[in-house]
Image 1 (cartoon, rainbow, N blue to C red):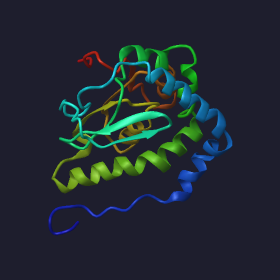
Image 2 (tube, rainbow, N blue to C red; image 1 turned 180 degrees about the horizontal axis):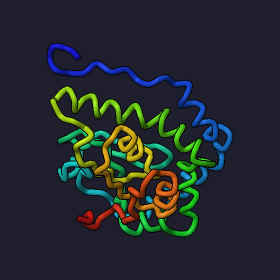
Image 3 (cartoon, rainbow, N blue to C red; image 1 turned 90 degrees about the horizontal axis):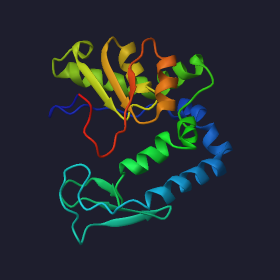
Image 4 (cartoon, helix red, strand yellow; image 1 turned 135 degrees about the horizontal axis):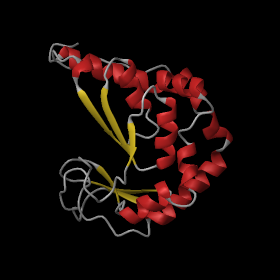
Length: 203
């Protein structure tokens, strides 16, 4: 830890990550087409006028860029990168719960619990450990804290926190396919399916 209180931390090794990303090379064309399908739905949604992060109005001279025919803009107030359109309830329902939504969930699925735990250990355990280390530097015991993961996916990060000894964890995820899969892989159910868009978060 440096003198100014900032932790020095280096990225995790690349080899374990590549083992989990092989499908991105093998199935690139199918993944790209699925991404384009989602993009077409997204572009049908209303234009975003305020920053998703800080609610500041979009500046007329903000920096913009386009990726896969989707426009994005940088918030002039906080620097957050916003998609040009709203991720509306209609969009979330089509992508996460509608016909074909299982294709989205497949990006995070594994064949069995052994593969699930390996992915958790290689990718998410280092993130959870970094959080615990940072809390410890502040005199906080990470095992005694409560964690809420919005957009929890298949529960990999929640599972990593659990493995470190934190048991007050809840994950909200719009994809029921991922919630079902994750809860079957985790030592105890931690995930709940809920639409994570315009509506208020559940209490």
